[in-house]
Image 1 (cartoon, rainbow, N blue to C red):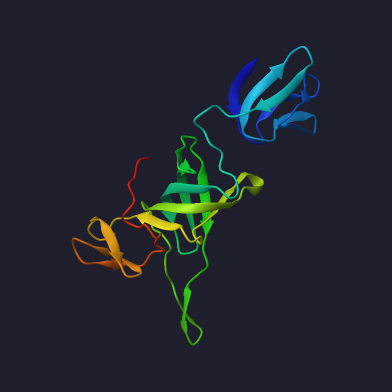
Image 2: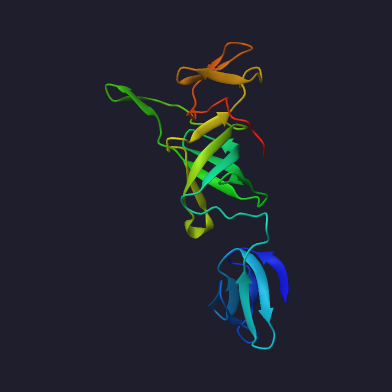
Length: 189
C-alpha cells in the first residue's frame, strides 16, 4: 500500500504501530523518514518504509550536473531552483545552495568584490554535497557558470564580450562567472 511523498524528518508513525523499514529511522519512539520517497506500509508485518520517488522527480546527488534559475544571490551565496538534473527536466522543486569565495585578488592584497551570478540568471552547476538534506552546488567546474542572463539596467539580453557579459541594447558590461556556452545554449526547460 503506497501513500504520500515524504522528506527526511517527516513523522511516519510511532514504534507501538510500526517498525522502521528501509528509508526510515526511529528516534525517541517516533518513526521518521530518513530519505525522500513514497511511504510504503506493510500492515501485516507492521513495517513502514520509504520507496522511490514518483517518476519525473530526480533527486540531485553529488556529481550530478544541474541547470537552475537563481532565486536570490549575494556576493557569498546563491539559492538556485533546480530545473534539470543531468539534462533531464526535474519538477521536484529542489533548491541548491552555492557558496562563493568572496572577491578575487586584484594585486597587492586587495580584492575586488564580484558576483558569480545574479537573481534571474540561468546557471549550470555541479552538485558537490547533499549532507543534512541541503543540496550544495558549485559553479567552479569547467562547464559550470551562467548560461543565460539579462542586463540588470535595461533587461536586454547579455552576450559574451571576452570574460564579461555585455548588453546588446544599452552597452552595460556585467561581471559573471560565465559557462563556456554562455548565450549559445538552446534552452528547453
